[in-house]
Image 1 (cartoon, rainbow, N blue to C red):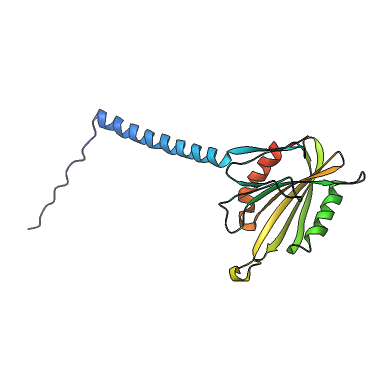
Image 2 (cartoon, rainbow, N blue to C red; image 1 turned 90 degrees about the vertical axis):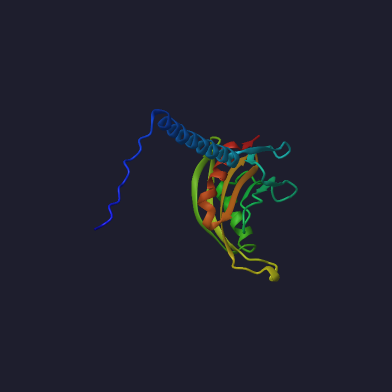
Length: 200
């Protein structure tokens, strides 16, 4: 004789229990949405950098380290949390002659960088406009080696982009550099800088 196992009938939820379940699900969805919104706002929060002498104002990511004490650039902002390569945004101003063009400025940058950066090479150039002025965009890459022999590691491939626009006898160069594997992911930071930079 075999044992018969009786399966209890499913217990149906009453009206109050069903509404409590729905409210719990809606509350969980609202908390998740709020968390994602706060994270997005934190990641997109910016601070204003302004240099009246250079005539540059821009919005840079909040919490990034800003260096404005170099003769090579107006400012450089780096993400302190990025490893192993510090994501970098930079604005430089270069004095140029009356016959200068954005293309000539990019050629000069290539000549300056080739001896400094290992395996430096230009990838592409594009025409674009910045604040209704003709500009040129150049994408490039190079290998960064660790100079300290005690910290030697695998070389990092860095990808960069410059946008050059001319202004009253000066070339304004807006730069973004990132480890190649994260270049596209963080390119929005550069596009935000381009959208907010003011040249006066």
